[in-house]
Length: 513
Image (cartoon, rainbow, N blue to C red):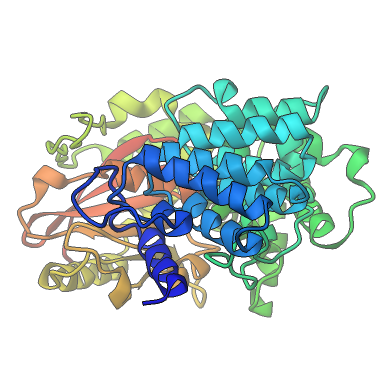
């Protein structure tokens, strides 16, 4: 086997994450060829680091092909399963090469968005600051968007690097500017040919990550709403200007702002629906929100707008009621119902979630209560219940996945309601205790009241009557009102409502009509 083939094979092994232990001496011996030895997982890390240093010296002295050396070292830099000491030595060596500043900066840009090791992130962030690599800002933002390292946000290396690269600018403003204008050229430069895809829309990915990060830095959207109207962004063109216009319209006409990246995409579809017949929805929604008193607009989210639009047309008395009146109406609807508390604890935390209205009522805003009333009205429909029980039976018979769908008003008879089932596709069937919402479900739910799924692995499933931690994460990411319907006994489902902030309300049992 030729040296080039050996290196290619070893590189493939590293990229696939196999054979990367730091154990020594049990397999292939040293060959004396530095590039081959760098990729040999059977050698001690210290030996592989020395081979790295020798390879760089050979390349600098002209004793080895400089481009081939750099390509092999990039393979190791990208191998996240490789020993971190080796990766850091390789990256440091690459960054030290003379005449390769642009390539090194590109490598940092492409490594950061997906890097999971805190030491590597910290090193890359420190180098970016030391060398003034301002164009690494979008990658730092994407890395920062990941939940990471058990540190407070303001102690994260990405946070500190962003402030150092943009002195005198607030962190939320830096991230917001990246969101509106990522300034990224697509391509795979800096990857050494081992990864990267020129067809990937880096701008869209960066904007999504920036918006998700802002959801942490600006939990209620107040700072983003202020920045939107700053005249510093008046000169924006292209998609940045379109996004800003959408967000301004959302704030001005619907009195809310998307919090997560999924909500941002949702807003774009509402502003430019594929079905021209849906274009009236925005007008009706804005008019309905305009009838809500100022006191009741606090905490309004996109998921509240359809319930407000429906109530304006079909329950106008709810729209003008205050919070206490809505709470009284909702309590009266729950009177006499049977409830089933989830007794299965969360695996990691051992937590039992609070689900009764008496425990959660103080956390519900006016708009939450209106949404609950409209959803409960939909669940009182015999046609909706019949469809849900039919779907629950399908779910119970299918051991490969959980089923789910969308609860919405009926397009042909808007005062009525309907449910649309979206069984997960074959590749998304991850087991009888998992539901994966399809892209079709998401796209079909722009004017929906809620997403729902079933816990009907068996009809006597009261132990799991209620959302799991993963279900709550889904509600937060999607920004949706959600329902989980659990088998209590044959012909009886328990219904639990939950929303993005983690509030759960048990709506009691429903029976097959």
